[in-house]
Image 1 (cartoon, rainbow, N blue to C red):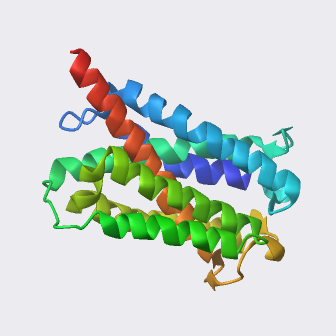
Image 2: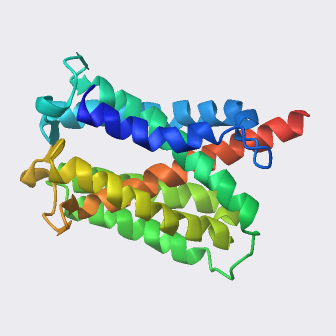
Length: 226
């Protein structure tokens, strides 16, 4: 078993074991989970394949199994299963223990953030990772304001995103310090927090936000049907 695969297993093991916990009953949400995984995972995997081929980042074969598909190790595909499952499990747990409380937010602020994200992407257009992630952020904020603004004025969503930075930092530190994943300095700004590129924090925010967004859409669609 490779080290990267082991990190994926550790990420998944706790949420998987507690999926049948009687209060949360996470196993009953499996259709929402897979809907979110597929809708979000496909574009991010396409980006992953393109970025790896372009040389924005690379994977250390010493810590991965000898199986690659489209230039990505098997563990990287597994990442897009273990991470969303774990994140959505934590999200459901968070919802169970913390009530929804609204914040007074001017949605125009998020339109401004979206525009700033697009401008940042253009400014760093020669830094491919930086530019791409800010394009994603601009799209995400615009999407949320236009289609589901209630997402942005709930404390639980914002607090949950902040909370997820804890496991993100721990896992990403191992990935970048060993390193299992190495970044091309030409593709990033170069600012790091410990060994983690600054762009990874925006990547985490965008990925988690989209997983939750499509998870909630799938849940609402199912509720309307029933």
